[in-house]
Image (cartoon, rainbow, N blue to C red; front, side):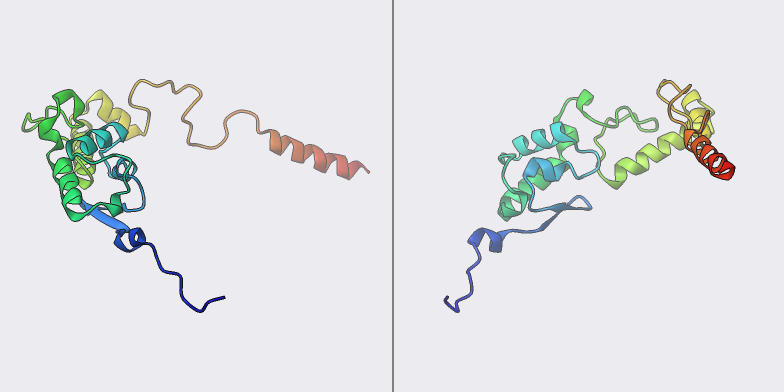
Length: 170
């Protein structure tokens, strides 16, 4: 029963709980690979490649890395599109510039929105599907993807009606 306060581990003192990379706050308590997947445009495969390029173990905690390693990760994220093959990027052959880039964060959302609006404007098939709010990539629509009310028999309503009718007879 000592009155001394428990000392915090050195790891907890050095841990950054938020690491800012590319306009996104990443959770510093997660592993490098898992934290990078919180960014738009970076999945597990891309996060693994970025960790490898930055020469960081993907299982290390992101917030426990020193500043040099975090800077290496930031540089690897920014240079990712230039260092990988074209098929591994998410924005290939831009309509206006013809360039292949890997968009991350808000840039990805903005370029995707521009592409959809361009398709709507020129009345391309995919644009028309987007306008109508229907599925775009050839999925079936006969029985799935319904956003309106119930189509067909509503079993709950029938049971309620039967319960009301049965209660009135007694």
